[in-house]
Length: 265
Image (tube, rainbow, N blue to C red; front, side):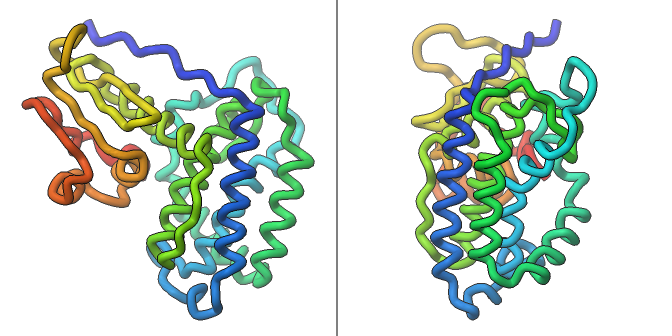
């Protein structure tokens, strides 16, 4: 009998909304300080830093645009929160084209950030977590969609840091939500209790079928910090690379996640 999947973690809409705006403000401060030379540097893949910075505004704007549309019909969302990380790979080509167009059409990045934050603050409510919205992956609950925005913002904040060297702060709630969603997605992808994955101080999950641990020190443990976990889950770094750099500690014969990573394409 396959291991039972656990109930999804609950997130508070108002706190997540605040975290999204706070992280976006941190990024805006960093982008405002970038020089023309820095904006022309390689950013992410084939994107320049300017294009990466423009892409970051889409994390909020997609929510705002969804709120301007009539609520989708149907009592249930088409995609659950834990399914979202696995739904993103197929959208890469369209997102890349839109990003380049946005960066070319909006050269004043600070004005773009100001407009994006203002629209989000005006259009996105603090008290309607179950309101359905249309996303690229399908209809989702607004509360769930905002949690996915913490992933977009935190992951690309790290991309911007690695491209420019800027020390950009992370809002604690945004970092926590991002870490927890990706850890829970791992447990959902490989349900079980034979391996305990720890990402202090935000998440502990059990995964992978096999003998279940119930007491004392688990025989199979993987532990890492939030940013390393996020890089592993999104393919920014590889399992072997992180192990060799002592960014991941793995003990036990089953404490190996390479075959399950990355979670997002």
